[in-house]
Length: 324
Image (cartoon, rainbow, N blue to C red; front, side):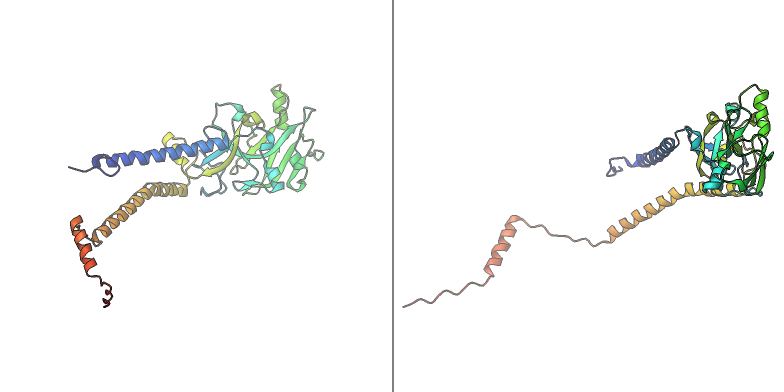
């Protein structure tokens, strides 16, 4: 009959209990991580999956750590005000960079609707509508005259009516054109007042998002889900494969790195278990080889006899001689 382990768990159930314990620990760890993410971002879910290559920063479809690539998971932090987002032009002036270039990357809903998949692109600049209703201003242009040109020549940073070109943008060093007049005319045709908003662009794209269709208007504050902060590379590919929602080919090195990471996740606990088992067997082997010291028990009577015998063997002092 098998004896119970010291823990009181029958031997035949011990493996099941250990499995449930390890699974519970893993689940608790995942829950703690998700709660921490929610506490930091203020959003649920706190992560988005990158479906296309519009934010990659090379032309050979190779992913890089620190850049937003197809298949990455990106943490998104909630924003409450326009000032929470630092644009490309503001980053150029202050040195603020995220994901390999100046400024913040934002996640927004096109047209402010849930009909379309949210877009994750870099905020290039913020156009603030002037009170005249026919022009914009952009304070980030004020201290960086070398970085942009406007047409007509009479346009200034505080009154933009024609076209604006941002020079040497991104890894391709593009001159990015912004047709301010067309944006204003869009509002006019729709019978709406000119609205303030962000001009956005994917790092891998040659043009801004506000070129035509539903994305032509600047991104208003209410459309923004949050700004990107941090990434978990490659693992978003799992969802894109299962849901068949890849918008562009997965980078080959991302696929390779994902399989290596999954293999390590699976193999590591096995290696730890093998190591612990080996150490336990070694300790058991040492205990078996250790010498055993046996002490013979004696009865109280024997102890008394031995004590008396020891006293008889002790030398006695000489008695003094008798005087006569």
